[in-house]
Length: 130
Ligand code: THU
Image (cartoon, rainbow, N blue to C red; front, side, top):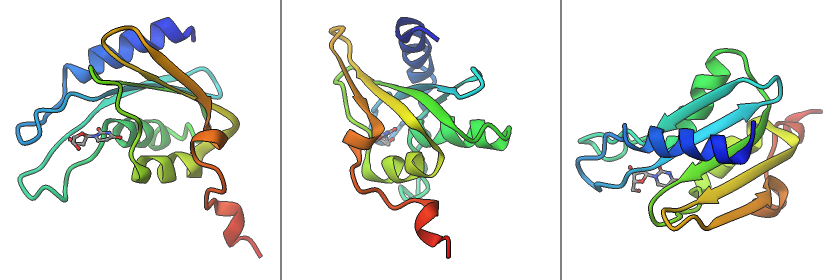
């Protein structure tokens, strides 16, 4: 899918954020290797630790449909926040070899990179194979 369409979906998803504590509105839209599209928003919890980021919500939705390979991930916040370390680790589990990550913000600025540049030397399932 075109990046501009993914951005629109990520922005829309951010509006569904449940974030009464931080008030942060994060949206993610991703494409899997078969062309399927999933979105997610951050969902906070009164325990704080039960909070889940927008990226992981979208990834869990995809994986729960057996869409295991991420091709393109768009993350939108007004401020252009990069994905947190935990989300990067979860991305590394399901990243297609050429996974592209795009970080967008309200001003229209976009940072695009290969996942391997966002998280070099990531720990992957291959490390656990004998
Ligand atoms: N958040 C995300 O949704 N994705 C990230 O990669 C960084 C942080 C959310 C979690 C929490 O609801 C709020 O932003 C503040 O950390």
